Length: 309
Image (spheres, rainbow, N blue to C red):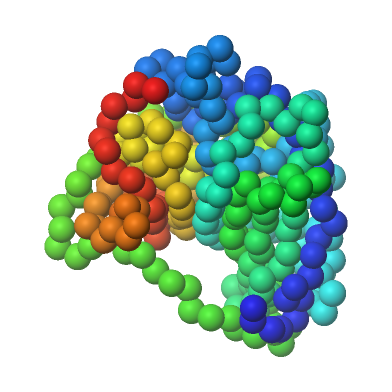
């Protein structure tokens, strides 16, 4: 592990919980379709939780009700670094490793998300980056179900004398190679209003006032909506809608998406296969506009679109 200000600091463990209904809602909200009933119907013999579901749990916690987002997101101070303003933070990049399938409900068990700081980097005038590792853990057995590595960018909160940090590893599309696959996701004016019911109740995604203050012109989609819906597209079109066919997934948040935008994802199979897992590269654009997810990479067992579990 690297050394530096804040490195190794552990946030207090957070209890988390979910019901079968939460798994159904999540699958609906990220675009799972009627020929994927194993994500959408609790009595299906292979009913399962979509693998990226743990990404919502730090927002949801153990609550089954609406959460005061601003109160819940008050930052815990990291020793040895400035106290950053959580009201001016955006997601940078997120990578998730799928270690063990989730039970369809946490009832009767105790799960926690456990987060530690991997690095805090001073990028000067643009701001500061906090990189963390978040594990979803069975609190009694210690088993890790998923691991997420993420970076938060605190806008205009730099120049405090901290380390600049390492260069970010990039995974661009292969040069001169046509995409192996292209798929689309048409959002609606209501897409963010549905997705937020998973537990991410940031007003930025529901009402225009916060987005206007931040220069977006109004409400915007959750970055993690695009992140999750694109992962669903990969699992559906390359992995036969079988969650066991994806091992790792990541993307960088490059630009905002507005409710009603169409997302277009281009996918490249690299042919680089290790132990049965092929490296996949992808990028997602708003149709006719900017890239919204860059640096896309997944490790998958590619079998094509079957969707018959």
